[in-house]
Structure formats: structure tokens, C-alpha cells
Amino acid sequence: MDEIIKNKNIYIQYDSNVFDNFSDKLFNVDYITKERLIKSEIIGRGKTYNIKHDGKEFILKHYIRGGFASKISHDNYIFDSIASTRSVKEYNLLNNLFAKDLPVPKPAALQVIRNRFTYTCDLITCKIKNIGTLHDFIMKKKMTSELWNSLEFTLKKFLKESVYHSDLNAKNIIIDEQSNFYLVDFDNSYFFYEKKLFMKSITRLERSLSKLDNYNNEMAKIIKRFN
Ligand SMILES: Nc1ncnc2c1ncn2[C@@H]1O[C@H](COP(=O)(O)OP(=O)(O)O)[C@@H](O)[C@H]1O
Ligand SMILES: [Mg+2]
Image (cartoon, rainbow, N blue to C red; front, side):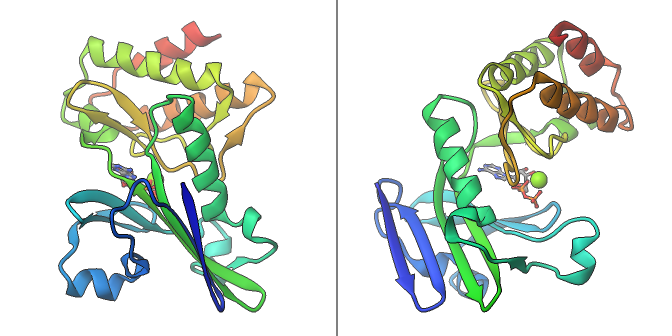
């Protein structure tokens, strides 16, 4: 069940079924650093923290802007309504996809901090015990034909449920020990009306894979089967 905490300019929402003892301090990087809750840092677009709390592992992400907007502001977004903030939208979408049994992280908590006309935000998801990203696996020559089949199977599930991932790249696709693939990082993603959009996202993924060492057109073959 979702609980909401409102405190002046801060809005926090968390799933009380996920946490035995929720603490809003989990969003505070100084606190989690001092308390040694950080297991590791993952450098992606921004910095993501793998944290341990009450014996469970989570991923904390601070939203930062990409592209041209990042030159104007690093992490401030224009505020419209709580429902339209980046973290609320990703949290809700992940909840929806998780309920449909799609392989995505379970959302755990989110924070929005308002500052007059703008806001910054963060998201905590339950960590998926993974053994690497698609990027790592291709580079290290660990992609077998079984794994490519498993990836195709996973992407088909997202197509079937009309899910458009706005930043589908080899680092947002992770693999667990049972050779299951998961998609992460659903910022700005949504349900699509036209399959064309989904095809565009997997074509973009293929283009990014084609720049990697040890990639042998496997994704291009998968795309042909999607047409
Ligand atoms: N729930 C999760 N479980 C395991 N790994 C995750 C999870 N969420 C993110 N990651 C890892 O952290 C990386 C960065 O997170 P992501 O949400 O993609 O942020 P960014 O916006 O910085 O790309 C991902 O590429 C993935 O490897
Ligand atoms: Mg990412």
C-alpha cells in the first residue's frame, strides 16, 4: 500500500509493503554515505546508488536532465503538478508494468522537492539481482544464442503490452542468473498507440549495439522477426 508524507515543500510516497521501516533519509546522499548504506555506485547518465536498508537492496536514482536542457539546469524541472513529475510518472508506470508481470523493477519510494516554479526528484526501486547489463555481456562475449532468444522473448512481452521505452539502450537492459532479461530506467516512457514507435526504439537500440565490439547483428535479426 502507498503511504504519502507531505512536509512543507517535500512530497514523499512509498510502498509500505516493501519497507519494514521506511525512512525519508534514504533519499539523503550525505546520510546514506555516513551510515555506510551505499553498497556501490553506478555511473550512468547520472549517479545511481545501490543501497542496503533493513537487509534489502535498493537502487536510488536522482533525476538529471539530458541533452540541451542540461546546459540550462542540471536537475531542475518546471513544476506543474505532483502527478506530472518525472518520479511520480515513472513510479506509477513501473507499478502498472510490475502488476502485468513484465520484467521491470518494483518501485519502492519517490521524492519530489519543490522550489517555487521548479522541482528536483528521486526514485527508489527494489534492486533486481543482476549479473550484468546487455552492454557488459556483448563486450565480454557472454551473449549466447539462448540469451539472445531470451532477450527477444522479453522485448516481445513489452510489444504485446504496448510499452514504449524512451531510452532503450544496452545499459538499461540487465540480466539475472536465470538468464532473464529486465528493462530499467522508464523515465519519460509510456504506453504507445502505434507499433511504429516501438519499432523505432528497438531500431535505435540496434544502432547503439552496432557500435560495440563483439556484436554480430543478432539484434538486427530479431528486429526482422518483429516486423
Ligand atoms: N532496480 C534496479 N535493479 C538493478 N539495477 C538497476 C536498477 N535500476 C537501475 N539499475 C542499474 O543502474 C543503472 C542506472 O540506472 P538508470 O535508472 O538507468 O539511471 P540513469 O538515468 O542514470 O541511466 C542501470 O543502467 C542499471 O544497470
Ligand atoms: Mg539508464
